[in-house]
Length: 237
Image 1 (spheres, rainbow, N blue to C red):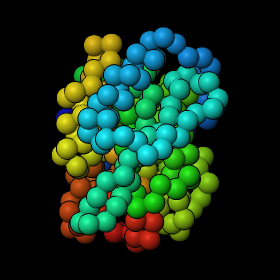
Image 2 (image 1 turned 180 degrees about the vertical axis):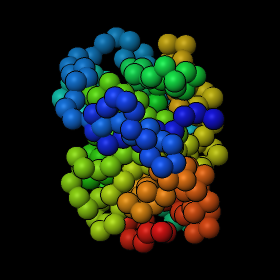
Image 3 (image 1 turned 90 degrees about the vertical axis):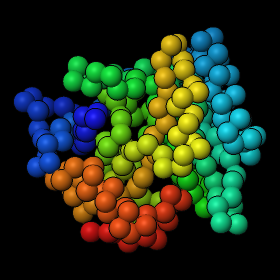
């Protein structure tokens, strides 16, 4: 099982840990790469988008990043159906162009990642937030993996119109068809993981920090947590 971390600004020494044993990293100002596009990035984009097209069809919209940052992150929007109702899949394209900065203890974890999010409306604020999250590990020379959490201090609150959702959890997608993309996409000889962006409340995040990720998964199962984002949902804790 991969180590579970949670972030709250710039890393201290000795490591700060939660009651559940998760290491808490603290960050202040970004220090990652800033500008430029490369031929390699174009090759990565072609490989990535071919996988997306096979799984989702043609994107109905691509939220382009106008500032030439490294990595260059676009957000693709696909419309699908669930129980006879349209929903949208937002997925980043470009976050995996660069390897994340993994600590020694995270040996074996994926260094290349893309983010995926499901919603009933493809709102601009969702697109902007997903794009911001994709840059976070590169800007701060850190990493994200399954079970990691992130407070939304740098994102305008309340998160996406919710008065209680103010944390982000990253976990593997629960849609089996989407989870198979990790088996298909390899960039520069490295597999690409796809992490589902799940908004949490502070009490839910505290539970995760105290008792571990399994406590959150059990809570989600108990409350039949929907995979499509509901900004009106109440805290499960």
